[in-house]
Amino acid sequence: MNAMLPAHLSETLNSLGDAARALAEEVRDDRAHRETEMRAAVAAQRRQNRIMVTLLAIVAVLVIGLVTIGVQNRLRSNQNAQIIRQTAATSEQIADCTTVGGKCYEQGGRRTTDAVRMIILAQVYTPTCSKITETDDALVQCVMRKLAAAASAAPTPAPATQPPVPGPSPSGD
Image (cartoon, rainbow, N blue to C red; front, top):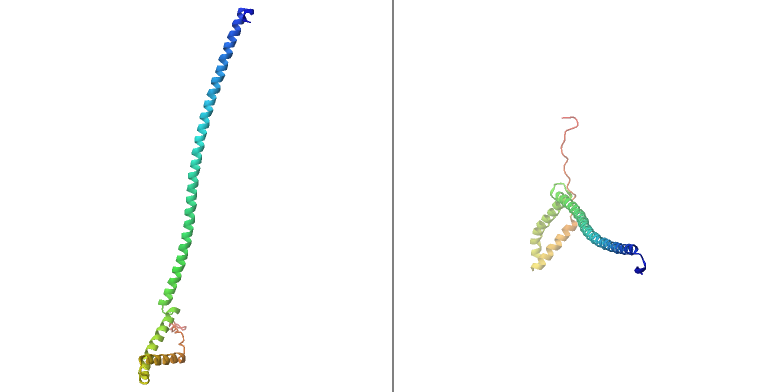
């Protein structure tokens, strides 16, 4: 078919064919270059996503740690407050038992008085009971009966009252 065309047309067609091939090669090179750049961009984006996910996981672990520490501090604070309340109650009870006029102090005094009284009565009843009994067990039984009778017959002592503290007289003397 080239034989029928004039030479300059044939040459033009050949040069157009060469230009088309060169343009097609350029398009293929450009497409390959864009695909390479796209792969590099996707790889960079993946790397950046991994870094962000890792950082997010680290932040989440830190937040969970801080929340855990806060919860533990609150629990310890509540426990400490309870211990302080218990310590205050114990201190009040100790003060009540060691301060003259405290209810516990007065009860302790009454119990001590009652115990001393029972010891003295046992000493008093022992000679009497030893005259009417023959064994140690019978002696103990006799003394215990007399102590029980004395305890039920004795009036309950009234709580001790504090004498009034003298203060200035109303007349100013």
